[in-house]
Length: 158
Ligand SMILES: [Cu+2]
Image 1: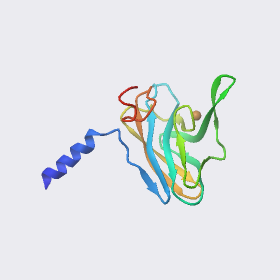
Image 2: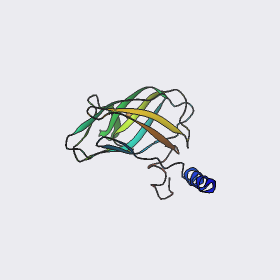
Image 3: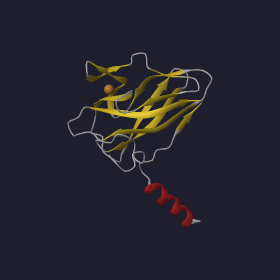
Image 4: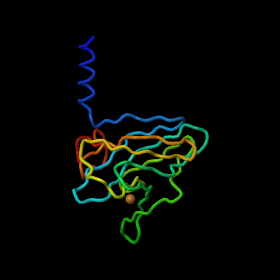
């Protein structure tokens, strides 16, 4: 029995970068991840996927994290050939039966006023607040500074 438990523990430790999905009501939050930041950086961006299996639309309206002074929901768009980001002051819609994707070059969760740099391999908690679904706490898995996708999703390439 002890042997089985030990094996299970080793299996868990062998895949530290793979985060568990978090479910709350009709919402499933998948693969929260972020990137390591430089020592002087004051902001970081978090990415994840939100699926809404319910019959009614929901909305991600705000978030908080103990690692940041404040957290905003941002979008990115091209403006005269330059990528710019701005806050989604009304939050981000998660359509009924649909998905909202937060990923590099698109919508993201902005950690503003980092209390310490984000380090590769660590997990950073954040609590998301939904208009209908209430609050859900996720753990952002911190990948490399230049990663384009969560660990295990990029075929080993950066
Ligand atoms: Cu941003």
